[in-house]
Image (cartoon, rainbow, N blue to C red):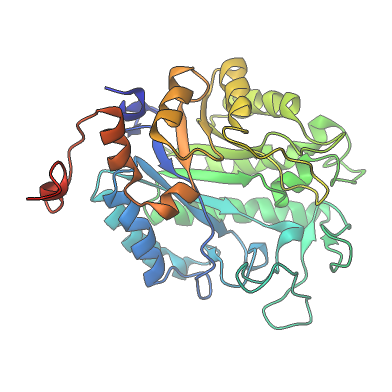
Length: 359
């Protein structure tokens, strides 16, 4: 059997049936934070397609933490029941439901991407005042964010804990902190953004304090579930957050009970210089996996079965998180098994289509 289809033990209670994970991808299709029919079709079809786990798109811990007004949220107890229905359906297909808890910080209050990419000002409909580690906007001309006070930082940390409790009640078994792509946690980590002079800014130890306190708060509610963290391993900009700092942070996160580092990059500043190419982020997963000895997920321009298998065979990562490829093909896992010569069990409703195109 190809390594791609070998099971993997994540913690004492969670085993994934294969190494292919649905990466969190915003759908911008929610109302008041609630999942709608679109989300049920979107996620359950990938569970039917045999991914081992689904990490639900960025789900805001507070309303002002949404990227857009159409983002999912889990900031109130009323959200729980809808997510319970979703996780129940996902689990029917031996797929582990996960959720990415997020706060967009200064990159919040935007339009849906197919409408435009501009910030919506706080005085306009579907807009609000953003917050951050800094008082500097992401893009010149945007409304400046409110720089969080230490008291307000503590309040956000508490909200991550409350969101975790709700997520567990809703049936999620993997909880991922969104610490990447220039959103709030990353806004504290990156020296290109964080201009604070208090205990949450300046030194490496101070800049990582926010995410470590979030982990501590979330772990208060977690028992058998698995905690993952998505990190941007590089800002792709001079003097920014980099792989060396990511490795050091990952060591600390591991000591605090984080099971998986989801290895992405970029998004901190608008002047980043990324050389986007096949496997361009895999070296980050490789470094973290082999220097920290923690489970890592590789992401970014992975779209072929043999490519994914090679990453695993080379010991560069433990998991493959697919994004756009699963948008193109919800049944990528089944197709990949054919390419690699593995005999996966298909659902009985689809069995007739497994091997013969003509009967």
